[in-house]
Length: 213
Image (tube, rainbow, N blue to C red; front, side):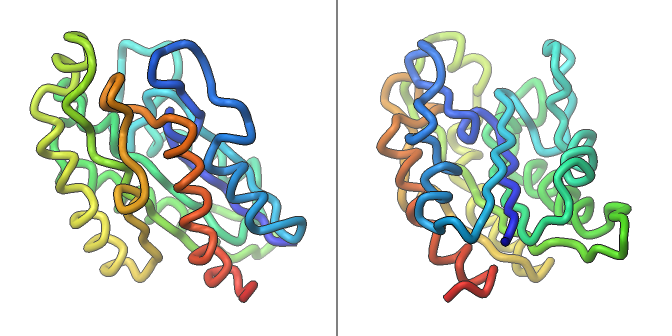
């Protein structure tokens, strides 16, 4: 049995763009990936609304800084064969980070954490697949526009920055923006069709990483 941890934010949690709640389990990309890969793989979904790569959000009642929480998730779920990280959307909030280079550096820190965590029983570090989230859209109410001021342009730079980080760290990369786009409702989150598309699209890459082909 192969075990995969999907670590992300509201795009992994399944936030519905109109703010009405959470997508059905069958529509969230980690569950779609589970169906695609079958019973020989165990997918663990760990998504938290507002999670950043490495930046503090002091307005939240939850710890949203992944650089502070990823080690705990790794220790909770090890041994792992693969960690998939899709973060960066919330880094585009100008009060937290606001630029793609900062998100890239945050992602580099998360790759380092996966590879250097104090795993027990001589368990080796899992493989890493980093995913750049779909770029932000123009839609959304005034609140979203203010929170992500300047972030739309920066979000379009994430894929190139993350690809470079993946190549430098010798880990896998996938651009979710190549198969999915944010909703026209809020310009940030994904409708059911687009979150499903990510799960289906990354399945071949995950199979290759896990040696299932």
